[in-house]
Length: 288
Length: 288
Image 1 (cartoon, helix red, strand yellow):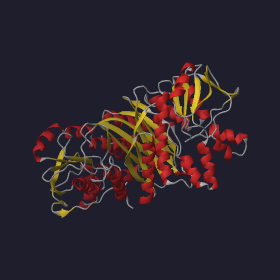
Image 2: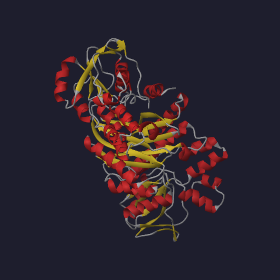
Image 3: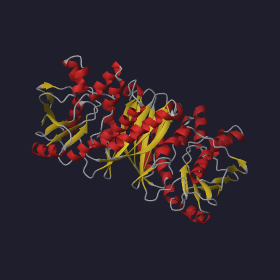
Image 4: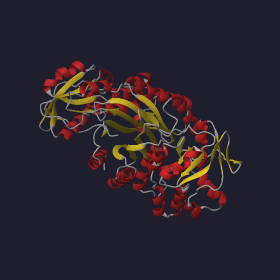
C-alpha cells in the first residue's frame, strides 16, 4: 500500500494518531524521520540537517497551536565525526532556541545512510486539529510557498550556501500560538499546499475553493523554468513547513492582528470539492 | 570517533543529556533507533519488532524510576504492507499496555533498510540518575541476564517462535517505580551488565566489586558452547533491558520487599576499579 493508505491504517487504529501530533494529557508529541537520499541533498551541512530535521517536528507542534517545549533526535550515520556531530547539535539547538524549546539530546546509531529521527513535544490545553473547518471559513497560509523546492534547485546548481540558508526555516510556533484561538482547523504544509488543503478539508468533511494568485516565494521565480514549473514547485512540491488553516470569516481580522508573519488568504472552505480558480486542484504532493 | 566518545560529546554539550532519559520539567524523554541489520535477526516478526523497539525506549523510562505515559515510533521500510504494519502496531500497543503507557502513533518513512525510531515519555518528580551511587551501596540487577543473546542463538538455529518470544521483554517500569525511592543510581542493562556497571560507577565517580555467580538466564545455558561462551553471552552481550542499580545497604531489604521481580545483588559499590571475584571486569559490551 502507499504511504497515504498506510497512514490511514494507523489513524484508524490509534485514537491519538492522524493529526500533526498525537495529544496526550495536554501535551502534544510528534516524530519524524529524514534521511540522506530523500531529504538532505548533496551539500546540506550537518548544521542545516540538525536545524531542519528538528524543525520539521517543531513545525508539527506549531500546527497544533501548542507551545514547543523540548526536542530529541537520533543521529544515525556510518561513522561519527566530532565536527559533523557538533555542527548537527548546534543546528538542532539553534532551531529549538528560535522557538523557545529546549534541545535535550538523543541517541546515536550506526547506519549505512545518514538518517535523523526527531521527536518534539509541546503543550496546549486546546489543540487545533485538522478536523474543525466549516464551510464559509477563510482558508489561509502563513509565509510563502516553495522555499524548499527553490533550495533544492540551488543545491543542484551548486549554490550551496544560499541553498542551506533557504533549507533552514523557522518553525511557525509563534504563529501557531497566535492563531490557535481563531483557527477552526490547522496543519502544516509539509506535503505541499495542494495535499495539505485536501487533508484539512478531508478531515473536516468539507471542500475548498482557492482563488487568485497563491503566495509563491519570490525565490521560486528565480529558479522556475516556466509558469507550469513555478506552480509545481510552489503548490505541489511541499516540505515548506508553513501553516495552512481555516479561520471563521469574522475572526480573520483579529487573527491577522496578532499573527506576526504574513497570513495570506488563499480561498474559502466550501461544502465539497477542492478547486483553484474553478479548476480541480489535484490531491498530489510530497510523499515521504 | 567511536560511539561511546560521541555520546560523551553530546553529554558534555547538553545539560539534559547523558542519562537513560533527558529530564524536562518533571518529564523524562528518550529516543532510540533499531534497524534490521543489527537489531532484528531474520525471523523477527513485525509484532516482535514493534514490541521490542518501543520496549527499548520504555526501558529507558523505567531506568529513571518514572511512570511510562506514552510512546511513538517511526516505521521505516522499503514498502508498506498492511499486514506487517498492523502486526507492528499490535506489538507496539501491547508493550505499552504491559506497562500502563499509551501507544499514540508516529510516522512512516520509505527507507531501504527496515528501521524503527522510537520515543517514550514518562513522568517523575524525582528521577533516579546514573550518578548517585556511593561506596558501600549494594549493586543489584533485576531479572536475569542473557535473554537476548540466547534469542539470537535461537534465531540462528531456526527456532523462530521461541526466539521471538524471548525477544519480547516486559520493560521494568514497575520495578523502576518500586526501586526509585531506594536506588541511589540506576540505568538499564542495554549495553550489557559489564558496560552498564562501568557506566554507573563512572557517572558516580566510584568503583564496583562484583562477587559470586551472576544471574545468567537458564536459557543461556541451553545455547552456550562452554563456560566462557556463557559468560560472554550473559555479561557482555547486552540488549537485555534489565535494571542495574545501587541501593544503600540499609535500604536493600525494604527495596526487595516492594520489587515484584527478582532483585539479585551482584556486588558492592567501591571507591574505584571494577572487578568480578577480584579480577578486572573489562568495560566491554554492546555498541549500537
